[in-house]
Length: 309
Image (cartoon, rainbow, N blue to C red; front, top):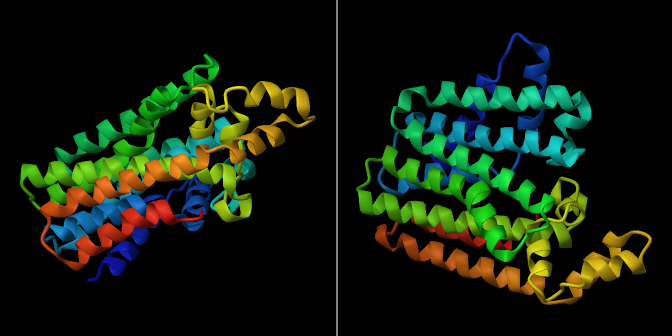
């Protein structure tokens, strides 16, 4: 079985596990899954597993599916908090079924993670810790917005928790499933962590520079809600007066805020930071022997920063 075939197995597992006699849960879950997505996290797990000699992809696939369901559940809940109406190029669960059913669908997806992870014993702890970190990051983000305290330091703490932790778990769980040694597991975990940071920074850049069609979701939400890289950048001085000036200048302040940020060096700085993180991640792969899986891990790190959606 190739990695691509293994990823198809992951898809099949996700669709099977969300089957329910309750039609709304089944339909809403399949709606968000059928919309697709990058599937970076499960691919990361499978590549990490393969890079350390793992060949039984059928054994690793449920864990990869569980990790993707954690992410999928989180975006369903995100769309409630953000009032998001588009996700992965389709109407969001929140838009089609409403707030209550979106909340329950996210809960349903989270609980299905337990079912998929049951055979993996102690690896449940790895995924549980990453999921706790995700919730802590989202909570810290909401608190930072509420308290008007979205500094760069807080921003990096937020993305480490809400994004990088799950990437780290994906890579380290893959290595553990292949019975890698502790040094190798740590190296792949650091690879995943750095890739996750880079991924989120680029996500925040694209929220400013790409349109909703490119992104497959509503663009500009982070800016409108005073969070993300742009908010952190502005609050630390370089574009510190952008928001105040924009409120005076424009009937729609977001137009002016975005224009001011795009004129500054925030976007370029973010891309440079993401590229440095990607190179740091690639350096962590030195512990691996040359293989197709290692090359694909290098490609994955580069793809994360070079993507346009």
